[in-house]
Length: 531
Image (cartoon, rainbow, N blue to C red; front, side, top):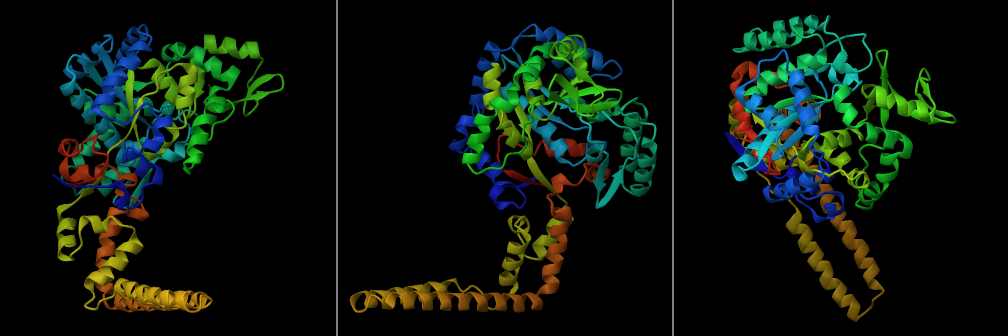
């Protein structure tokens, strides 16, 4: 059950941009189509309908069906794929890298957010169809980012000497990490179930892309989730004109300046700086940046070179070899899908906000951008310990130093808050300044200096008392901080470190439904769920 929904600004670890964005702050109006609401999503249907090539639908259905050739589909999935051919069908999408065993648990929250929002929209607007999409970032080449997962503080890592597009990595050596993990979890109630799932998905697949599809499908097939691998010649053929435009006009580099300038004016950091050409070239197991040179273009390693005419010819004949980077991928996705909403994490929200002016230049409908659900899964035993220590859930989610200060004051029998004393002192000096104003105004400077000196003295005494009291109650405070370390492993929120298997080994597949039933994609708050 969901214990709490807490404002993001009261939870340690979230950026200022994310906190402001989830409050539907009007300062973002130039950077978005509209904030996520059922009504705005209905408007988005109208926008997308007027600006989407319906001939893409038949190709989508054909390619998605082909990608599911060796997977048994649920009736809901079959229905959803078929519905994509209909003009009244729209998608809600999330995407992610092909992390080993899905990586941090927020991977799961992203997909649940998409499924729940589709269900919400379907209930509200039954004359339309809403299909949840998971877009696999199979073209990514940063293996070190995705080759590991964490379980209760231990890291399990897949070692491979392969290079290039990670979705095409062969799985010959994957058994080593599965065997290691199997020994580690052997005593848990659902250990056999999760190990069986891993073996079926990873050892029975030819590459990482196929294994990830099977694993995500195992977890979410009953919810009708459709998984797309866009590293595909026929899908990229739909997009070839936009690829050429990026090559010839440096669209993202030039057109994102307007949105990025606005973000700078609002004092937000730029999440991803565009390059002049935001494309890679895939060849011979490598994924290399494309750069412009004096006589045309070349791959960053210099092994492939083109004249302007040659690169256009290659885009036409081999579009699958041209791979979008992190800023170009959203444009590819929104161009080929009948999509109305993208759901991403805080970093994704930040870089999508750089792109509206690019979409406008390309005449592609910019989707509603929604931050995914964020959550903490809290074991009942930890909740009981917090209650015994007289610590609320809101307090345990505070930054550590603020929490320590609150605990000292909470556990101390002394009055350690000098706020009233400082206010009284301010009042007394205010009266003295009134007198000085009527007699000798030159005396006001001396009064202000003395006031500051005495306030500083009180603050120093307050800190020393807090430090002394902290020593007295250190054992109790340490017990609280030990719990906090479980909630913030390595100092980061649980959702960014812990793998879903930490909870699956105790709960089984029912954990997916438990989480799903306790998350509202439109809540715009941090959820705490008892599990």
